Image 1: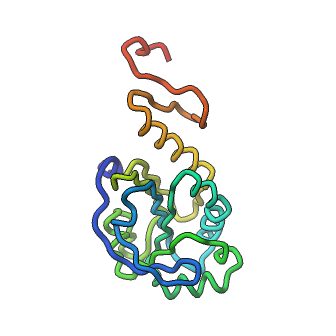
Image 2: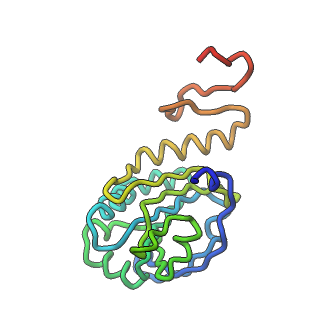
Image 3: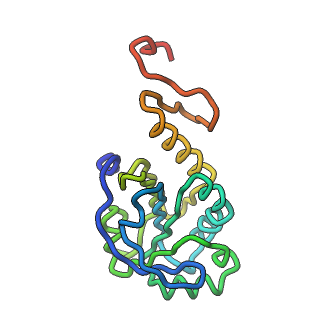
Length: 189
């Protein structure tokens, strides 16, 4: 089911977000021209969600060095995001936009809406500068994600995009050897 998202173009959207003291407008156009992470989480004022968002905040400078913007999305409103940002030390560290999706439009566009609850699955989407999805990760509600592993995957996606004809093997880290798929490698790995 998720494979249909890989290489697909993101759908149009417009939303309000909260970012470092301001309400801002965000649309699909903002995700184009650079690498982006759309990071869905179930709800503000919960348990696993702040640990994930705090981890992203702690690693935000490294995402920025890679030219990557993070967009956190839940079905809460941008007003609720502000209240959470103002009341939580962990969430108060966030510098990236927190998109409010109270209608669920964006959440449904990315296929991560839990309809019977009106909240998002834990979905991570890495979008390339052309607005195409390169990485999809969905985890169950009780399983938190790791910013360092996401950074590793983004570095691999950026490397592959910049080096046609090369691929990154399992556990690849920046600076390590890549592979150039060819008939000579078949059965040799």
